Amino acid sequence: MLAEASMNFDSDQVRPFLERVKPMIESGFGDGEIAQVLQMMEGLKVDEEKEMELSIRYRGKQTVMRIDIFMDDINAPDVAFHTDPELAKEIDTAMKDFADELGI
Image 1 (cartoon, rainbow, N blue to C red):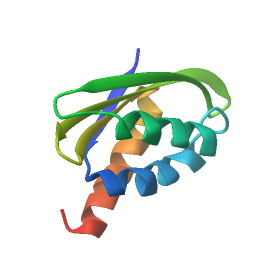
Image 2: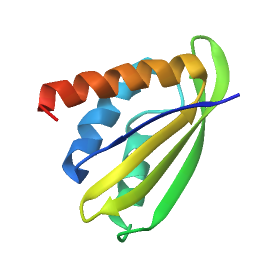
Image 3: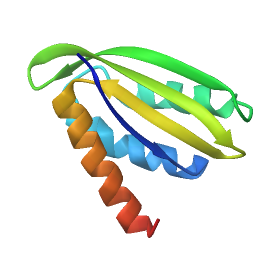
C-alpha cells in the first residue's frame, strides 16, 4: 500500500526540494530523475497534470515512487509523492521543514 505526501510549491522551489528527497532514497532517484521531473513540470499548463513512476530502493527494499504534478496556478504546481508509507512520512516531514524555512 502506498501513502501520499504532497505540497503546493512555487516552480522555482521544486528543484531544491527534490534535492532534499534524493538522499532519502538509496537508488532510483538521482540527478537524472530530478531532471525528468523538472522537464515534465515545465511543459504543464494551468489545470494540467502529469505523473511518472519510478522503481526505487528505500531502506534496503525495492518499492515504487509515483510523482504527480498538477499545475494548480501559473508557476505554482502541486507535487505529490505516492510511495512506501515510511518514505512518505519522511518526505512529509521534509515538506513541513521546507515550508517553515521559507516562511510559508
